[in-house]
Picture 1 (cartoon, rainbow, N blue to C red):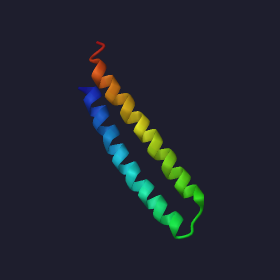
Picture 2: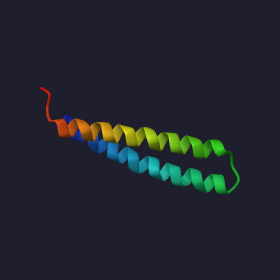
Picture 3: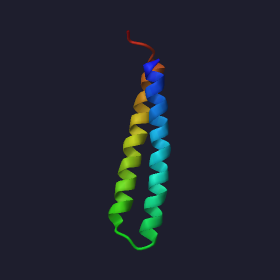
Length: 64
């Protein structure tokens, strides 16, 4: 059960990170620093990696 909750939280994190990345692209286009774009991309990649790790953990089944 905890693995499912963890995967759900990770999926929500990916959604939030996509919104942050879209915001970073908008800010970059309006003339701000490229660091916003880089930070948004890094946060998205970390959230995506976490989701993939949690889904793999779900597929392997319970270890207890």
